[in-house]
Image 1 (cartoon, helix red, strand yellow):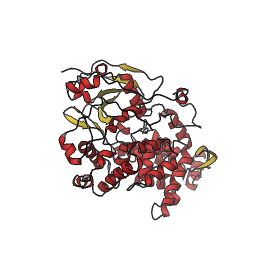
Image 2 (image 1 turned 60 degrees about the horizontal axis):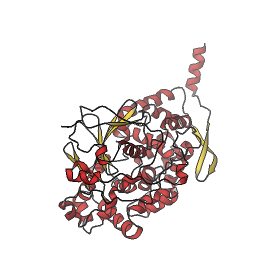
Image 3 (image 1 turned 60 degrees about the vertical axis):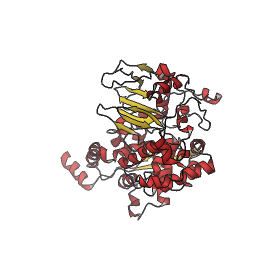
Image 4 (image 1 turned 90 degrees about the vertical axis):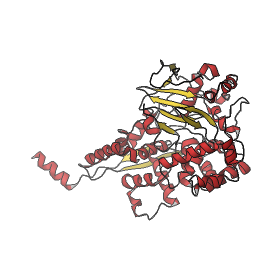
Length: 472
């Protein structure tokens, strides 16, 4: 048994809380083991993550773990990152200092991907037989999406005795060094966005957010692969997190490329759209328990591959304006406004997108827009009105702020959420209500710079009488 090497990136818990971010319904591929470690698949590799006081520790398992022969193949192939344009080279990845003009982080253009001919694909005959065709090679192209960051510190910890594994693929043996993996991790968690600064800004604008934030720190948006994100949320329709996770795993197990085995469990990459174009895919997915979603997934795969250019088309939506990207997604069968907004927010670099589901609807009625309580249903008009309200209130990164309230409303966070309700009730005693009106100062290129005018607090008659009595 050879002990495996842990690497780490510096990151405080207030910038990233793994326990909340990986369970709040963004990605459905992460599981926590008995040692408090998170194991999941991202960018074609299996990752083991562990939260430290001021760092995120990580291990990476590559396809070379499967056989010695595969290790030799990977040894000849170096990880190639896309070249940066002159414009991108001129930009600096520095912490956000202003909370007024927050902009999305600079991302590498995903419209083109170079594929190594030495990439190892491991697929059983059973998987090929199930779908009637060979998996596309572009499922490993996500590794090409790593961005070049500045100032990120990567070091190696001592051997970890808890998670010793018989791992033969050290980073150096495969020419896949920790620096390149740290860039992928940095991009996935969007660590170039200063979350502490964002929380401060949102808390100043919104008293209720401030109360929630005090109990839910470190919640940020993941930057996922658009294809995986799209099909995962097609599965989310009328569903809950555990069942969505099960469906996503079935997609990977039956249609994705095998990566490796970790702790006795086999891991597969997310399938490409071309892998889901077989004639029997819909029938097979129904047999696996996908229900009506099977038709949506099979139709989307065939339509995008045959009419739009496949996976690259979905990824190209990152370069579109928010309204255009959302409209394109909603043209696909089974994709409504909520699913489209989820994809825009979680994988298409649209931090202002606001997915409105049951949780967000109830939060909105209870704490922000009581006037909507008379509405019989969530119409398209009301859906858009809610999105605009939050963008006016929180600014360009409204989708990130919304995700904090969403996470706090989930069942598994009920205990922490009860502390928020206690704070709200305690604070409401001296006053009947505190209302905040968001007013738009200026709109430019679809982004709003906002200021907040607080209405005067109305004190109840009972409170006034109590105050007079105390004075006497």
